[in-house]
Image 1 (cartoon, one colour):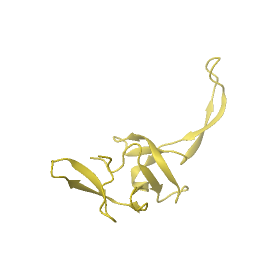
Image 2 (tube, rainbow, N blue to C red):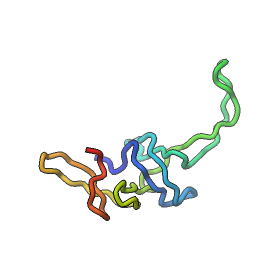
Image 3 (cartoon, rainbow, N blue to C red):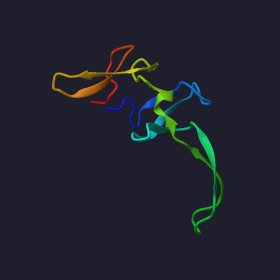
Image 4 (cartoon, rainbow, N blue to C red):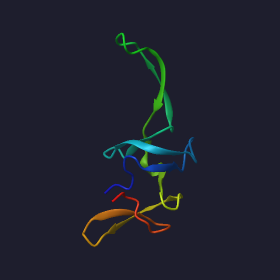
Length: 106
């Protein structure tokens, strides 16, 4: 079970974007990277490929290592580490280390 999933709100804890919050757009579990909305922009020089796609310099989000982010708890609204709990019905869920509330939407 991953500690960061798509649609989670995360805070960047190191690097040039330190302190920024954003939503996870995409995860790459095999590479241990994620793409966060509004964080780690890079410029890509793109050639116009057809009549619909324009060329030029395009800014877009690049992947960032999962170790550089912390999940923001929806309950206490603080960046926190993720604990794993097993509920009575046998389901494994993520929970906040600070307040103990469940992070996963049940």
